[in-house]
Amino acid sequence: MTPTFVVAHFHFIMVGGTLTAYLAAHALLVPQDVRPNVPNAGAWSLDHGVHRLLFHVHAAVLAGNAGMPRRYYSYPAQFQWLHVLSTAGASILTGGLV
Image (tube, rainbow, N blue to C red; front, top):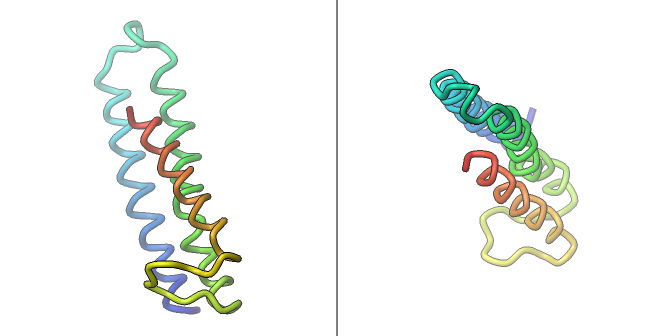
C-alpha cells in the first residue's frame, strides 16, 4: 500500500465523517416541519461533494504511477481534469453545507 493511498483514505474519512456528523446533528436540532426536505438534500449533496472532492487524492495513486508530480504549482495538462473534478466537488460540498 502506497503512502499516498493512506493519506487519501485519512482525508476521506476525516472530512466525510466530520461533515456527515455535523449535518446529522444539524438535522436533528432543526425541526423538520420548518424545512422538511433541506436536510435530505443537504445530506445527498454533502455525500456527492465529498466523493467528488477527494476522488483526485485516490486517483493520484494511479496518476502518480503515470508520472504526475506532487506539490507542484502547475501540473501537466493531461492531469488537469483531476483538479477540475476536485474543484467541482468543493462547490457541491459547499452548496450542501449551505
